[in-house]
Image 1: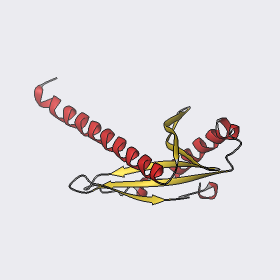
Image 2: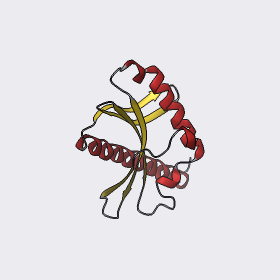
Image 3: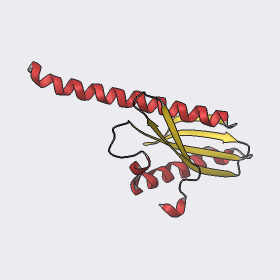
Image 4: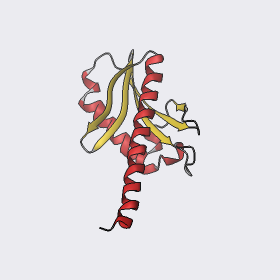
Amino acid sequence: MATSERAPVAAAAGRARLARLAGRAAEEAAAEKLRANGFRILWQNLRIGALELDLVAKKGDLVVVVEVRTRGPGSFEKPLASISRTKRRTLLRGVRALWKGRIAKMPEVKRIRIDVAAVTSDASGALQIEWIAGAFTEDDA
């Protein structure tokens, strides 16, 4: 591969790496917000088969599954707009599997809720979180 052909590939790899770092920072900011509100993080980036749940936290009899969405300052699509019907269905499948496989074994848990944390960053890199508690339910799939 010629040097001029490698430049776009290297640039794309660099952008992908930055996006992963931004995603991790957004998830950590959301986890900190949960902790500040009295939740205990049970799992982060929990794999359930081919599905992944970003954050799972517990407070009292409530388990919250949080989908963390992030976009940079110049992004065309906002974080909340990136949650398609397909993504909602996939997330609900993951939450059902989590309930059946792990949460049902926790007798103190009575409820489960799906939240969305929409994380954006401004030009200086400061993160802002828009939190939507109970963002969607089975009826929204």
